[in-house]
Image (cartoon, rainbow, N blue to C red; front, side):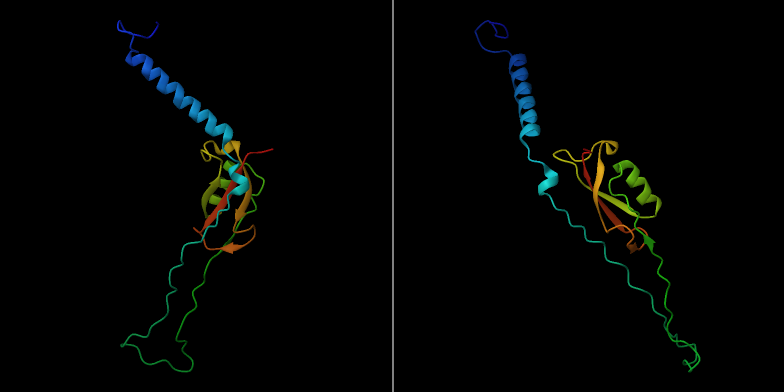
Length: 147
């Protein structure tokens, strides 16, 4: 028989080819039978804690504050609005969010995740568009296949 040695046993090549074929069949079945990840998956992203705001202190070398000397300063916290990227191609949405000075986290993408961002669109985003957040904060984009 083809693939057998002189004693009727399969050769190593026959065994290896059978294993590879079984693996390939398993991958195809997983892709075909896996449920739609977007319908059942809910991702919640919690922003990282913000650093403590500095407060003014009075060193020992300074005189005590008077009625006209302020004792604390209020630092100006810079914020940026989250751009509206819902419905855009994922690669374009990532560029817009990063150009605003924000970090991007992508969720969704099915069994293998997002491999080529240009093949996906943004189904939702968190925080929502227009919300003012600190530069460097994370914007979570949930990806889905375009219709």
